[in-house]
Length: 223
Image (cartoon, rainbow, N blue to C red; front, side, top):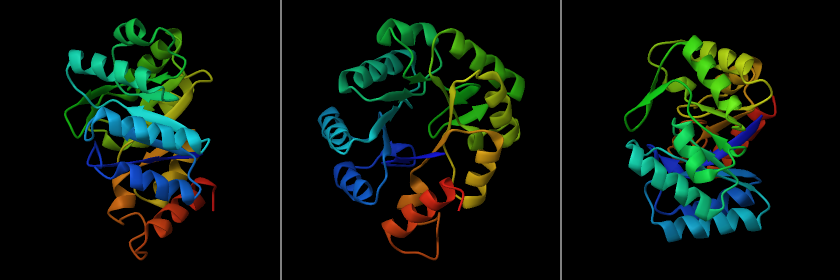
């Protein structure tokens, strides 16, 4: 599975995202994302430039909640030229901004609030995954471990079955090697981690950024 390192804490991009991007690129991370809140647009531009220069893949995750701010965030992602845009739920609105949805990964289920929680059953998640693929989305961004009404892995399995070849990214509250192994078995293609790296909780016996990142990379590779 791909490990997507998010330059975020508590669903906001950290103020020193540029410095953090340099550090994790040096550690070999090649999938790097950030949220649409927390730093100004020009900081996002510089972060994307660093990711691109490293031949890594850039991700913008939309956590805005109102329809108007979501549209603005999608437009910002398009202007930034990120490789993949994650989040949001309105596929028609997304198409009006992005036109081609092949690099767009909406939230299935019912995401609410900020930090975001996820409502909805496995059946609803599966329905939303099928709809995303019908609209040409590359896959979905599933907030499995933020679920409030269903077992997280049941949501992952439902999404995997319904995506018909689309990519399944699991985002939010992934903070243990056991979760990563479970996600791999359930069929996830990628997962995001942000806060658990920056607060040292993924590998609590290790004190460095490198120690956290290397343990996550090892778990993602099945070790």
